[in-house]
Image (cartoon, rainbow, N blue to C red; front, side):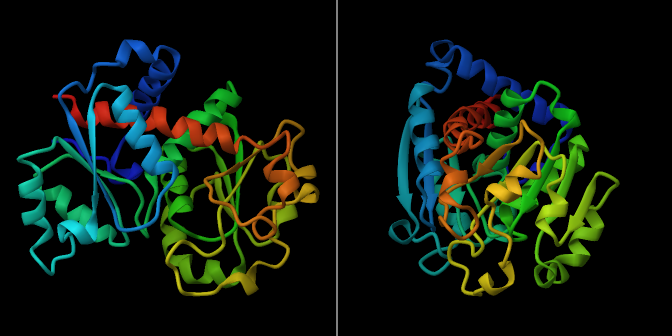
Length: 297
């Protein structure tokens, strides 16, 4: 049984397979319009969602499948009314695959080991692999030689960055991680385990973005996080000055939603170098490819 939990669970060949499939779906969607016929996807949300919800919902329908949105509190997916394993066992009698978005990464890892249903990680507090694969597709569309790219992350050490680092460890492109010293110290041990010659840490955004092809960011405080870290991010707002220090062809990426004026200024978010809407659209094609990958016998 196949699952999609974290990018570092896969090798380069497997990731290439998923991204290549996404490109084929995007180029000729009609060809794939019945790939998931008579299949049903369950969506379990414990956190708010716009892009993940729409990309899976519409994506599955375009593949000829059906979708059930299952609110966690309504079905008792909390180990209080009954064990999560028991919930999944019941769901497996009705549906073919489940996407889970929660705040408990350990839970979905453990549930995937039970092999009750194919499980897709739609975001946890630890990682956001679907987002990063959608971003990887977007990068490949914007740059022919994506293997020689220089990418910069500016902001918090969060779930999106963690998935980005997992991807970098597989493809070995240049990645500068620009985070405040106070944030880096908290994650230093984890970072050092993943560090390589093309993965470097910076605390100065201007220095970190030099000659880069892509600048990525995210909100400074993740959804549901109670720790107010914004005081550490002075001078970390991606603005025209920071963009001007990157390469001439540099693009700006943000997984959205964005806090305008915090991690990015509106003129950059809405500017000619921004590909945020392309990122959002590409989520659907990657989601479709992931669905076909985990459902394929």
